[in-house]
Image (cartoon, helix red, strand yellow):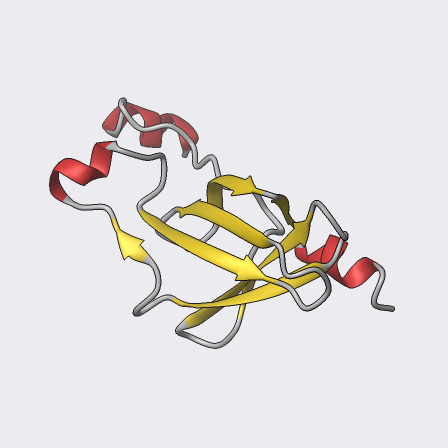
Length: 116
């Protein structure tokens, strides 16, 4: 099956999605998780797929690796440092690429690790 997919879509490669970074919340929402570099606080961020994620179309389609993207400023409750996150998603809302200033993107497993 993989051979046929490559044969009929030679310019396309396998999805570069990173697993574990997104948790689905119903039909129209997803969760991503960031961790502050200064205090280590783990912060959940809920994103609405219908209004907060931007679709890359037309000339903008070549500007990034994902079909969708979001830019968010996240602030925790411990040190109030601004965390600037830009996250790219594929068509299934899985993380393809991310850039986080003053923090890092963490998986759902890493977020839940210390809570238990």
